[in-house]
Length: 353
Figure 1 (cartoon, rainbow, N blue to C red):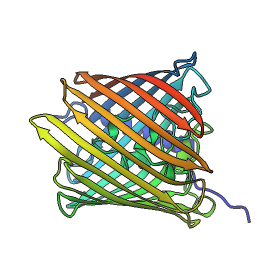
Figure 2: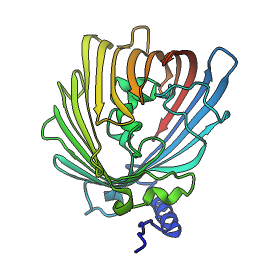
Figure 3: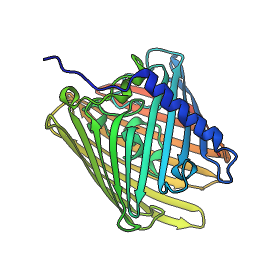
């Protein structure tokens, strides 16, 4: 018997997107406007040896509270985020395993990065729709500064699973439980494979556990207070094939005076024997030492199919105005016995209403 996958037809998806946009327009005159966001990151790369690249990431997002559709429909929110990736050089300028730039991917005209609905009941939130693990796991107040991809999601996951990791997304049920301000539990159930939207942008809506399997990821984290001064997390992933990965994250503020802050980072990840078996990292985070700036140092190590890679990242982000930041970054990469030096200059634009 031929197995079939469930995909939302293209016409249906276009109608859903159109209806969502119309709802935003119709409610734009309301006293409390719907959220609309625009984020653009552009990055110049050099290996200091004649190789250059220019990489761009565009993100458009919108949110609409359910009350704007019906006042009796409370505690709900619709969310859509579309992304597009463009770079000038097809080949990467480095052969590193962990990918020094967390925005660099093959050119992607458009992808529904997030498309779904969230409902809240007191201390519980439930989302259904298209989503990706980057929205919920690994991206923290400290790691959000760094450009190395492994600071955003450990290679024990990104290199071992065909998961919904940037720039891919997949159908998902995502649950969050917050019994107190300090304790946060997250758990997600994904279609087992995130299909490439370059072949068909609507493949992100595939639901086919029979062929693709199921991917689950969960995390328990404890923060000393709601601002995240001292954050400790434990996570576990499992695919229906039996492959697992576990990790721990520690972020600890060591010093704070007025708006100045110094903190440290510890990361450890392990996986069942496969492509990438382990990952560990340490780092430092320094905020507002000069003005509105964030300085970070991140050192990490992994092994992929017997090849060990060690990297060092030094990055410094300056907030020029509320919506614009500039971020020069240096990467030292040691992959096996090969050494590579990379310089980045990143500009970040962010506007939300």
